[in-house]
Image (cartoon, rainbow, N blue to C red; front, side, top):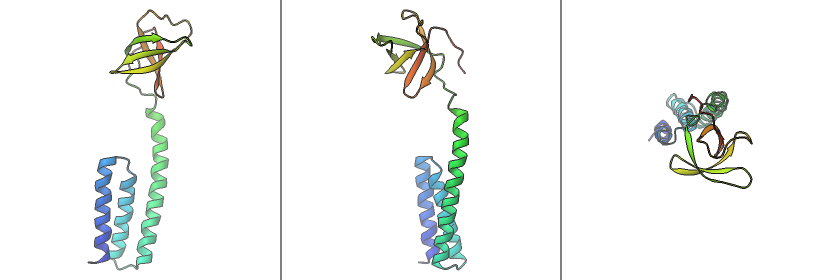
Length: 141
């Protein structure tokens, strides 16, 4: 078989794996490998095929990282959990709480020291794997 067939088969495998992961990095590599296959189809030497594929992969990865870094800032504050009620299981001595929410137990802390422990509490913010609670009902965003 010709070299370009191997290049295109590898590009198809990478594109198929991308469908499973959904990260776009394998798609960048699939495009880079496909360009190496196109170079092979046009009669370029193996060294040029590898260089073109490597440079395309590196440039595509750098572009994707920069693009993703601009996209994450817009969506990090959009939590669907804000404003929803939680059930407090227990209050700890240090002022934190253990709450039941979405079928699991979560660590939580009150928004302020004057948050009443007896009131219905709502999620004010999500910090990592912990919740910040408030007694004021917030509108969901």
